[in-house]
Image 1 (cartoon, rainbow, N blue to C red):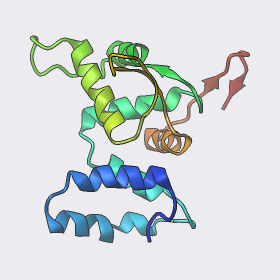
Image 2 (cartoon, rainbow, N blue to C red):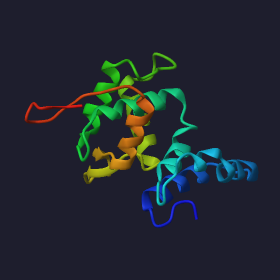
Image 3 (cartoon, one colour):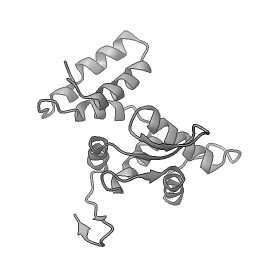
Image 4 (tube, rainbow, N blue to C red):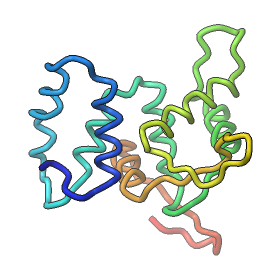
Length: 159
């Protein structure tokens, strides 16, 4: 078993496999070399990485941006989308689509594959805030591939 007892890994792999309709796609995931890369027992990073790899570049950039947030931080949907807009990460194929709509679509995509976890939704069933699972945040920091600083609420700098 590739991910014993780890619900997050099972959810993300399930979402990935759900989108694959051909047998060769399933075999590619099963036989991928990523499972052999320094995997410790119960390490789910390979499962998360396999879910991350097929992201289109625009979603990879938005996901990598999430690495700036501290663990267990509640992120407001609207704030996240505004950050993405300010960084120029939202791509509009045409001028008829609003950047907010594109940001909402990206946010929903990350929610649908369990990279974001629902924290706060209201009667309208709209998700207004989320958290990133610690292990998903570890992946975001890994794929960012750069050093980053985290300033906490006490204004202490934590490298």
